[in-house]
Length: 189
Image 1 (cartoon, rainbow, N blue to C red):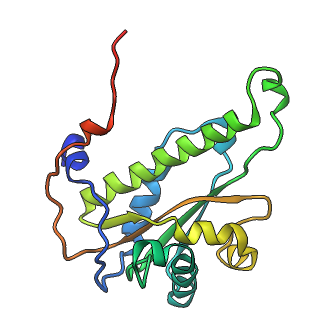
Image 2 (cartoon, helix red, strand yellow):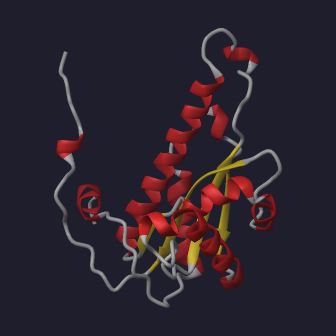
């Protein structure tokens, strides 16, 4: 599959089957993450790969407590058998080498965008592998408060959960979709 084809087909799917991705498929997804750009703030990014059904249920309940009403959903993980939570160290102070050049907020924004590129790589690789993905930040919002569950899924002390994404198989077939051109305002100068 060519990259542009995967980009046209990539979409968030929310109807996961009972299929559990193999260790090889999960490794292929991790490899896609490793090809995402990094900046010095993201060199210690942490990835929790959750497949334990009991912990998935806890995370789902946590996400529903945050977003269930808004989404009118009884589940925010939609039965996905694999759930990636990506965490990083956010900065309160600028590193010495950047003192007077940027703010901590700018450094943290760099962390967010680089982790965002990792999520995009996950989604594109999943399309190629015939797997389904869907970002799910309801549990992430809950993990900001539920430190016990954050520890349970291996998030190190001092790290903040940034984003997450589900992985599995779907009964919905990928098909090309229209682009989102109308959502972007481009100005040539």
